[in-house]
Amino acid sequence: MNRKITIFGGFVLFILFLLLLGSIYLENRNEEMYNDSLMSNYEYDISIESNSTLQNVTLYLPASVFENESEVGLEMINGDYYNKPSKWNLNLEDTEYGLMFKIETAEIQPVYHSLPVAVPEPEPGSENIEDEVPEEERLIESGEYSEETPVLTPIDFGISVKADHLINTRFPIGNESVLLPKHNLRESKEYPVISLPEHINPEYFDYESLVYAHYETSPDAEVQIFVQMDGRNEWWIYGWQYNDYSDRISVQLSGPQGGWVQAEGKLITGDGVYRE
Image 1 (cartoon, rainbow, N blue to C red):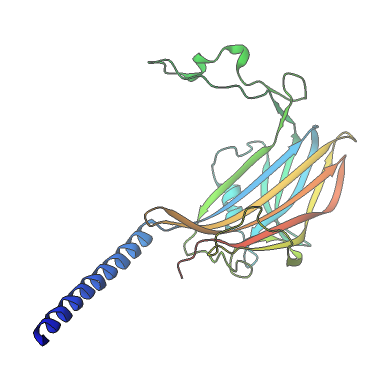
Image 2 (image 1 turned 120 degrees about the horizontal axis):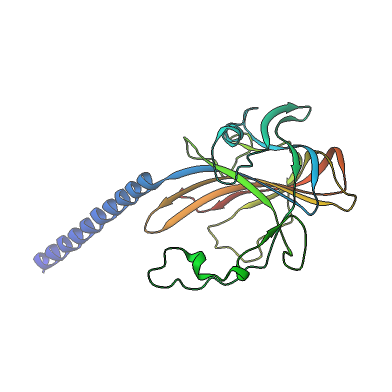
C-alpha cells in the first residue's frame, strides 16, 4: 500500500513539475512576443473645417508639450507626410500662454465633396479602378456648397512619432507630452456609452484651453477646429493589445476673428489593457 502511495505521489509531483515547466515556458514565450512586438507612438492631428473662405489667417493652437519642448510639433513642422498643407507656414512659438503651434496662410478655402458612390468590383485584368467608375459618378470637389457638392470636408493633417520609451498612459500629465495650455482640469461626468470589461478602467477629465484665431471672412462663416494628441503602447501576444491616453480640444468660431478664444478640452487616461 505504501509503495502504491509513493508511486502515486511521485506521479502527481511529475505532473506538477510538467505544469510548472509549461507555465514557465508560456510566461517566457509571452514575454518574448511582448518585447519583440512592443510599439510606442505619439500621434498629433489637426482638423479645420470652414464653410467660407478665410483670408490672412493666423492661428495659435495647443501644441504637444513636455517640459516646454515639443518634439512632436517639430516633426509636424519639418516632416514630410501625407496631407501636409504645402502653402501653410507651420511653426512653434512661445506665447503668453506657453509654447503653441502656429499656422499662417494667406487663405483657407472650404472643401465640398459630392456624395460618395459605391465602387464597383474591378473587371478581371483591369489595372485602374477609376476606369470602372462612370465619369458622372466620380467624386466631385468644389470650393462652395451646391446640390452636386453638399458635403463639407475638413482639412485634416497630422503625424505619428515613435517614442523611445514605454509611454505612461495612466499618468501622462507631468510625464508625457500633452496639449497645453490646460486650465481647471477636473474629473469629467462623461462615461463610456457601452459598459467596459472590468479590467479596463479609463479616467475622464474636462478642462479649458485657449486658441488664438485671426482672419477675415464673411459674418456668417462657421469654423470648427479640432486638435488631438494620443500616446499609445501596443503589442502582440496571440492578438493585438494596447493602452493609450487621448487628449483633445475643440472650438467653434463664427464670423471674423481677432484674438484669444476659449476652447473645450477632454482628456482620457489609462484606456486599454495593462500587463501589471
